[in-house]
Image (tube, rainbow, N blue to C red):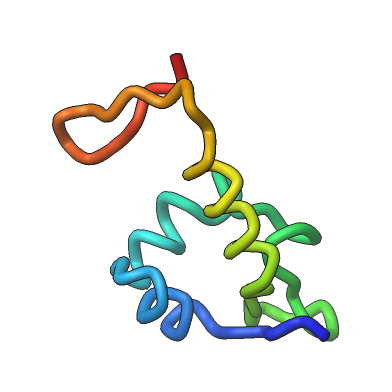
Length: 76
């Protein structure tokens, strides 16, 4: 069963600002139909926690990542 969470709940779990999620991650890293849905075709966005968690785990297990000075990584 999937756990659907709001942007604010996702921000709390990831320790990110909700605005950063909406402006920087949504539709660049987190995609509709994969990482989030719009229930009943409305404007509200619900994120699918298990999919996001699996995605984070997958990226953190990659060995060819080079840490960058501002906290990002280079996928060398």
